Image (cartoon, rainbow, N blue to C red; front, side):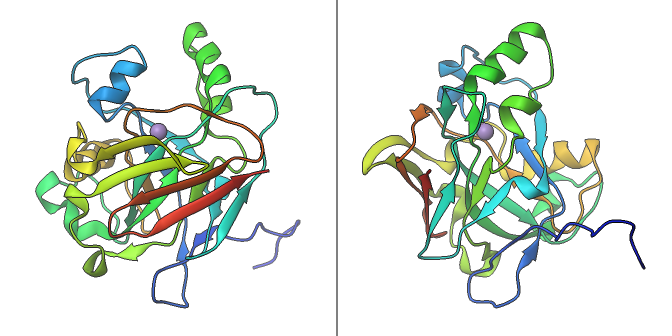
Length: 231
Ligand code: MN
């Protein structure tokens, strides 16, 4: 195969204990999937899950034990952190039942759904797409993927984010409104999932702004720690 321009390099994430990397196909994100976060965003109750996407090359992969760097993005003065459990799909499929979802999961990672909240808010008010608020360059820092067998009890894992060593978000994955299986069931009814898809499962309460120079430290128990500096 030859191309008229140089094709972009495939985006990928490191894998714990392996030299081979996990190639990223798509990045799906679930909106408002923890009750206390839905409330802080002005919503209540259990609504059907909804999804948005980030481009694969918005990922900022961070190796274990290293500190990643995210450039403070343009056009915003209200960049928010959202710490999230990320599900990595190893086997694709469509119309996957929640009960079968585990057979499609390669592993899990800790991710940040970074958000230009002011721009997202403007788009919401106008009924326009969220892309400019959510899908910008470097908007998805992510740590190494831990294969399922080594990941422990992700369903009941503690999840937290600290900024400069102070707690901002702290919750438990068990508080997901739509759990991992249900999320995969809904998502795979709308899109055919492919190996390499990542699913950011939503953030708990406590989202807030960061500024240049801030150090973000996030974790999901059993999946290591993701550290990112805002430059
Ligand atoms: Mn999010």
